[in-house]
Structures are given as C-alpha cells and as structure tokens.
Image (cartoon, rainbow, N blue to C red):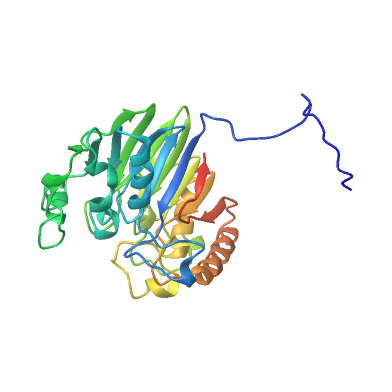
Length: 311
C-alpha cells in the first residue's frame, strides 16, 4: 500500500524557470578546421562552426559550418521566415554546411547572408562556387528560398533589437569578429583570431601598453567589458610553436586576451579536431590555472554542440 499523499500546489510553492525574453547563445557547431566523430568526441561534439544569437524566437545565425545542418532541420519545421546569416569568413569549416541548410530549399524562406568583402571572389561567387557541379549535385538555382547577399560596410546595423558591430581579426582571410548588444547586454564572438602572433613567452610579462599587445588594441577595445566573450584558444602552447601564422591563438595568449577585454564570462569555441574530450577537459583545467597566474577570475568554460548560454 502506498503511503504517498497528494499535495495541492499552493501560491507559496517555488518552481523556478528561466524567464522569457532573455538573450542567449546556442552553439550548434564548436569544432574548428574539420568535423570529427567517434566515441572520443561525444561530450564536446564534432560539428564545425555555427552559433545562434537570439531572444525567444528571434534568431541571428553566425557561420554555416556543419552545425548549421541540424539547426536548419529545426527551422524548417517552424515554417517560412526571414533568416539572417552572418559569416565571419569563408574558410571551409565556416561554410561547409551551407548546401545542407534545409530552409534554402523551401519556398517562403528568405535568407540574407552578411559578410566582409574577400581578398578575391565576392561573397555571392564563393557560395555559388561551392555548389558547382564538380563539388555538389544541387545547384544554387535549385534553391527555392529567396537568397540575398549583403557586404558589411560601415560599422553597425540593427536587427531584431540587436545592435551588431564588427571588427577585423588576425586570420589569413578577410575575417570578422562580431559584437551583439541587446538592451545593454553584450556578447562578443571571435572564432578565429591569432592574438600575439609568434609570441611564445609567459603572458604575465606583458601588459596592455606592451608594443606587441598594442597592435591588437582595436579589437581589445572593441570587446572590452562584454558580458560574454566567445573567443578561441585552439592550440596548446606546445602545439603553437609549429603553427605560428596559422591564424589561431595559443592557450596562454588567449588567456591574456580574455583578461585585457575584462569580459564577465569566457566561453571557448573552435576546438582543434585533434583534441578529444579528455584532452579538452585537461586543457580547461590548464586554462583556469593560467588565468589564476594572471590574477584574472573570469568564469571560463568550453563550448560544446547544443550548449545554450544566457548573457
């Protein structure tokens, strides 16, 4: 016989929920360079760069790596809408999911793609070329959605009550970092940035006025005091020795960048495809140790596929 009793819900009972109207970041792909799979990558996931910034059901998408496929399947179920897609740069790991983005094939959807003017081909030519018959069986003309391309001129635009600003990063392509501001709250997104190229020393030996740091003052000031900083730290210091100039930061240099921006919180994306779950867990512990050595108490964590973070 059960001894459990049924209790009526009273006004004083407490059932907390996250309130609506909160700005969030939803990570759909957090891997750099190339997708990975297998049991060693279950916790962090293996999709390449794709992130959503939004409030409630209003979305802004950043990058079209392989993670955009799952996002597109969800959006397709919600019915036609206007989609804003910002591209940090057009390296493969940031556009390879574009041909598999379901809304592109559904009449009624409108997709506006924003990006920098490249070093060679224009933005539209890059995406059209990706769908050449030698690479892919479906052509650009087969897509049923309305697709527009917009080069980011000036310094900001406003969409869905978000003020969106951009700044160039240090990477071997025309690459942008973004800042999204909504009602006084801000998030900075920098997926690819080699902070302090070639610097292999201890970060505590540098300050904001050091000559090598001052060269990055524009991006540092651009992201200063954001509520949430999303910035890569792709290589361990040992790896970085042989990867100077590849366009990604060493772990300790990225820690200094986080300190100089004075962000309230730091989430690290764009994990190297060689870094499995155990490696990333160890790397995060080392990140926290480096931050302690810099006397910087920022909350830090790793991004993983399907993570939702409020800011």
